Length: 73
Length: 463
Image (cartoon, rainbow over all chains, first blue to last red; front, side, top):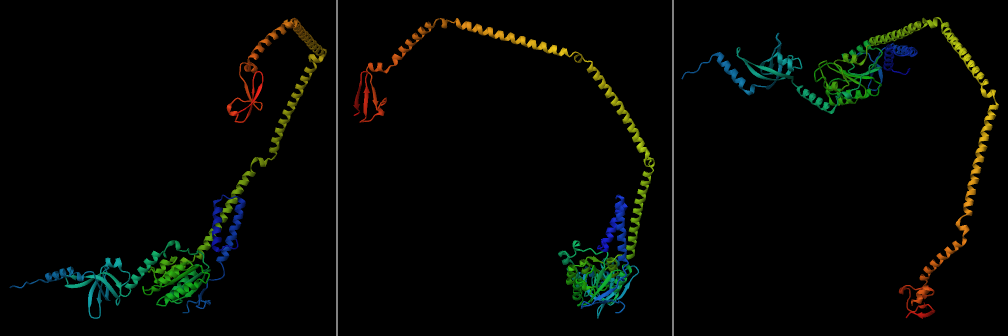
């Protein structure tokens, strides 16, 4: 479960919540699934709150990648 | 001879008729430069079309304008107009009534655009089933556009606002002029070396000539071949380029392209919050429902007074014990009765009765045996007596006489068949080596034969 992409994690989370809302699963299973859901929420939020602010970079012709500042023209 | 005098109305009317009838003034192409462009309040546009030496007034009626015009006419613009010459009777003026109007010099580009669009469409480059899905949560987005100008700024601003966790990689290129398309193609190929989720290809608005690199066939084919999902954002909302058709998704503007490329982070967080709440609500409901059920079960009398369970059982047990006791008493009583009956039976009390019975049976059998053996003895005595008195035993000579008579009868019969008697009547028997010859085929010439007569045998030879 650790290796899921954000998209897969979110999909899985939606699936589990859907399952919980339908309510037809046994209590033990529901509690397990709830644990899974909370774990997925945590990983999703971690990814969304990643400290790395989006930085625009420019790929030079020689393949170098340098920071791009759109105000310097 | 009196010359005809025309009124002004008459002569203008004649001129109008003549010009209207003349095919040289109908649906003709005229090129020139727009000047004195003046839109009227009612929506019709009046202007003058001129060249270096001359000019002609022109009118563009609203309904025509709405129907075909793809650009905004401006003073100084060189245009090609298709239209007819009409006479304004009241003022004695003639003017050009515009049917269609295109920018001079770009007319060819429009044709080229339509032709290429048709060709690539026929080849299937615009087909929906080739279009790749744009990833919903991209990590890195590539942008091919000019490094200066509003396009890259708009894209960066939009992505930072909506989804700041996404990386942006700019692949700078010229976006207009003859050198633009080879650079765009090179950069599309270059992007394939990077792990991009989505690629935006864009430039700002401009004339059809400005946008032309994005209408080049080579660029279109490169976009089609690109493995990364592409969003095309070229020009303004109303501008369509070949790149737009061949890309996986078309955005009306660069800002829109960025919006299509990334989700809204806050919305996404809200969505996850909502999911979390729903999960909590569901599990809380589940738990409280189960708690209610559990409580209800706890309140049941059985659990409250568990002794009831064994009290009830004890009662059952008592019943069973009683039944068992009653039943065993009955069995014992039955068996006692049987025993008494047996003890009082006649046989047990009079055992000599049995021997008396057996003795009688035995005497009966002896009597029967004596009776049968006497019977057999008497029958055999009778048979012996009959045999002793039979005719044969008393007259044995009678039997011999009877046999002699039978013998002489049989002897006479045999005498008739004697071969010697036959020989006596003159017949003879031919023999060869002691075998009787009965056919002429049995002998051949030179064989010796014995002929037997009644009184002797002679030896002879076949000639």
